[in-house]
Image (cartoon, rainbow, N blue to C red; front, side, top):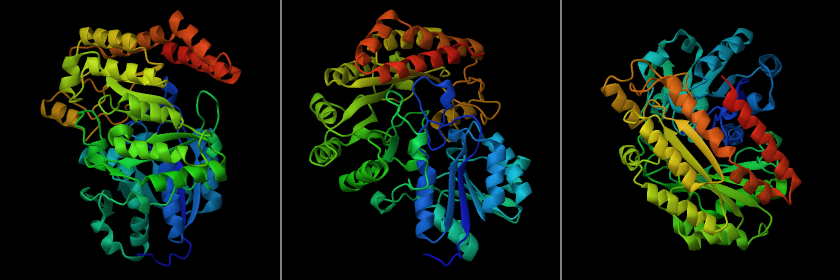
Length: 487
């Protein structure tokens, strides 16, 4: 239902502050503390902008954190734009800082409707909402905001009685918060408009090696896996919902021909889960005007690939594949319900290398059952797998995950983990280990991996014909040293 909204203005923003992956559900990381993560496009804001424009709203969109803008810049924009609604994308780590910013905004214009979006609100408990800063918030979205934001704002202004019917939100009534169920997932992903790249500053989102513009394209939603640390199956469901190849191609062509973007990250919980779909997409690229003009990368599970498919991916422009390898301990892989083995991890990486692809390995340490012998096994596997890039996380029990619920039941979690991220073991989920020792192991391992003479020689050899890539590798090396030695 579309209403005459009299051109209400909605301000969509990533607030100023530390760079975080605000558009992610399972990877809400501090980009400045990572080795392979980079700033990704604000697609959640872009989707909201496209949806709201179609419903007749005026939109102002800005990613203050990626532009390096200040709180004053934001408040000046509020003063000049005079929005009726502010929609802010938050994370588990930044929630309290973001709430303080909202207080500043409200001081300028008291009648603004505030909507917060983030995975933190999917299975939110009463303790979080009891913080006094939440008194300024009208709605919180924990589900797939692209399918929610239009109805939510429409109903707020014209039919508030319908608000409790919306799935995946927290709403306020008579000063009390109420949470609706998140049990309805939209099947037709093609029904969504493309992210509004007219409003997004595409020059902010660059691919690390060449420094060119990078677009994130969401290809599917949902994950049937049962990894105990991951929020994706809860937020997007266990059933995989896939966009049509035709629809994805249309978005890529818009990016390339209208916005001059030739690099793509295909965002999916597991891009390679549906082999037939992947092959259809690759063949469509090869049969299109994009053939030989684009590069792309994606994530994959180790048990969803084969050499024939990987070679086709490479032929169509894929140059890098990222794997969630997680551990070098089969015990840990089993307990985290990864349904893979150390041997499977190794074989998958070698298969990708054989196809000519660069590889990324993601690992996690610090689970409740682990000790430093598990860490050493993970380190050993990491060096044996020898992916081109690695990231080493510290296990974080996000609210709503099976890991969190288990630790809560066992009384291991004494305090909530709001305000933490993947790189600080402040939640104390492993009583056997000193959190500072875990962080020290992480930093030392990452530094050892990237400063190996053999690794440096390989990277120089790979980029010797492209001085720009070589220079960017050097910059990231300096950045890595700063991260590692930062207290």
